[in-house]
Length: 319
Image 1 (spheres, helix red, strand yellow):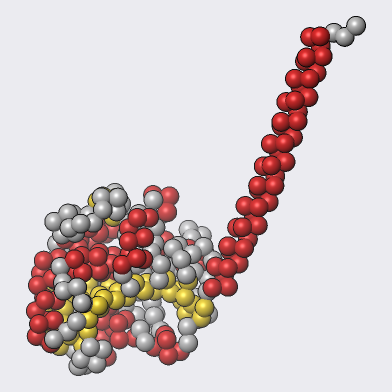
Image 2: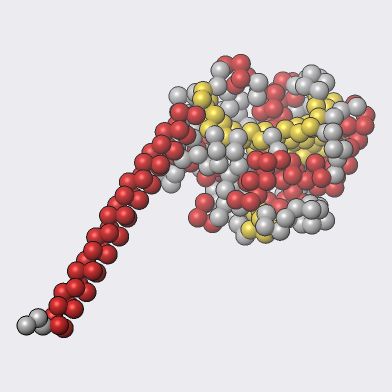
């Protein structure tokens, strides 16, 4: 005679075994599929990385000098007497400058007749002044100020310190850009900056289009850009701006604040490799070792890479 309880137990265990095996088999297959997709994605990312030609690299030289000139005091940039940085763009027409290098970073606005664009430049972090450093480590993510950034979604969050730094000169910068556009009949605006100045420049690139004529064209070129905001911010930048952010070798600053704190870089990275080759890295926070996320980590960081050289140009006031 069949022992019903024993048979039921065997049957139950067998069904459980089949379920476990089935789940394990599906999980294994799913893992293989996911792994395969990851490999294909990684390969596609790597294959999409392209080297810049000499002429493409040289294109950025004028903007690198403009970003470097922002480290000079406002009296130097307003008279355009800032040494090598000013001499490199000798036809530049300054319109306004400001900031004290402490509470408000130095900035200047003017017009480049050779590039046919208004230039907006912001000073980066001065390690000898403590306030900008404090701003750099104020990593709380907050919504953008609705007065300065009307109509921007509250889902878009940015670094609190960077936002405060940008707000300090926002109205003066806007007025200077409006005056420059009117004086020179310009319809193009180019915004540049290095380090903290790069973060301010990126926020300006969101701010200025909200207050300038709709036919105005913009481009943003930054150096050593830290992460500024969350994923919705990065997506907004990708959808609405024309950003190029250039990173040098193992510079630690572009890897901060960490991604673990929900910060994301927008697209548009150009990375200078140890060989001094410049490569274009597609996507947000490209993980390839040819790009800053893969190349620069706590074990490889080199703060000396932060100021360059960028195609032979060090970011510093040369006057």
